[in-house]
Amino acid sequence: MKVALVNPPWRFDGSVYLGCREPHLPLELGYAKALLERAGHEAALIDAQARGIDLGAVRAEVAALRPDITVITTAPSYLFWRCPPPELRVPMAAAAALRGHGGLLVAVGPHGSTTPRAALRKLGVDVVVLGECEEILVLLAGTPESRFWRIPSIAYRKNGVDHVQGGPYATCVRALPALRWDAAAIARHAHHHHRFDAVPDGPSAEMETSRGCPRRHGHGHCHRGASCAKETSRDWLRRRPLETVLDELDALLAQGVRHVYFIDELFLPDRALLEALCARDVVFGVQLRIDGWSREMLDLLGRAGCVSIEASVEGAPEEGSGALARRCSASTEELTALLVHARRSVPFVQANLIHAGADDPAEAASWRQRLLGLGVWANEPVPTFPYPGSPAYARRWGAPDDGAWERAHAYYIAEHRAFGDLQDSRPLPLAELEHGAR
Image (cartoon, rainbow, N blue to C red; front, side, top):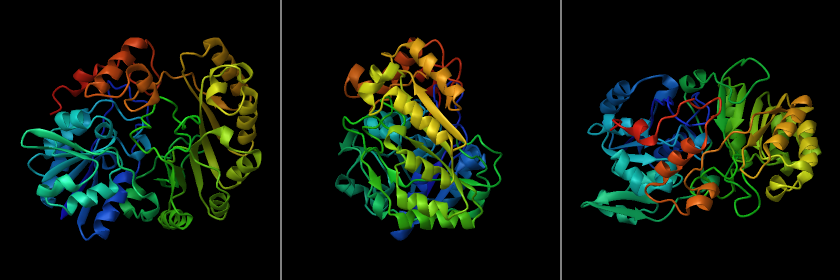
């Protein structure tokens, strides 16, 4: 089978999306390409965002390939699967452009993982994958449509009836290969994600050493907090073998990569990995929970080449007596001490303050100013979007239904008068964003 893997040309005007707008390596499509080729299929990755090409050019490339299957992602890389643009405007337009040119249309991403029937209807694709997609795409490529009923974690329409089979899929991360990217993809990747200490001196790349969150069930929150879609996207903690990670990293370094961003939901203290990084000429950025690290391991993190830490903190009560203490294993003073200690060896440390309704704004502002005075960057608390599939959504509305994205979006723009620096200052309603995309 011949498979086209498409990362569409993203746009974010009018969106409440808080993620980075720059292109990043689409790891999910890279893994899928490697597994498809291992299974004997032909796979081509078309990264329209990174290449700066429009849907007309994408359609021409897909039509020239004449694939049996075309895969479209609904979020701009795994880095943002837990906090994607709520609207499906871009993938809807991509599906419309490729219909009739790309064979069987398959959508992968967080929207179909959370609300598969709604995603199937909006996108007008043939199949939606629930959860992580790499292994499921191999099954789809090797199974005739008459036997799709055998494949777990997909939704599809047959004889006018929507079929949803199983829940979100979790890939066997240990079995994923070390990725290889073509030279052009690496050469064009000039953006160093979340790096502020220096002007980039060469290409960057994204990698992962683990997938999922070790604190998923009642033991705190991942880097992005209770608003991220952790129930349906990249949930259970799974580690990649160290030898695979280093194989992939060494190949990137041989291509001239100077900086790596590890997309792990929580970058974990791993002495063997950090010592291996110490022996390599590379700098990197991470997102982590600072209360999961000792001072000794933070020192090793700095020696290994870490130049950027993004540590999310939900609220900022006094002396650990309020909301944060109930969500975190350390008091405010302990968190402050760890952040300041990390700053001694890591050039940029950010306490990424997430707005929580129970927190006192004056206390949060006071702690922010204190951190800034100690050399730790702390943003203004950002109102977080209650993603369907997140604890924040479940507390307010329960399990997501087909109208979950519209409900969460309408609530968010009605509830907040001010938005973050990365968001559009005048976000549009979801229906307006998606209108005319098909």
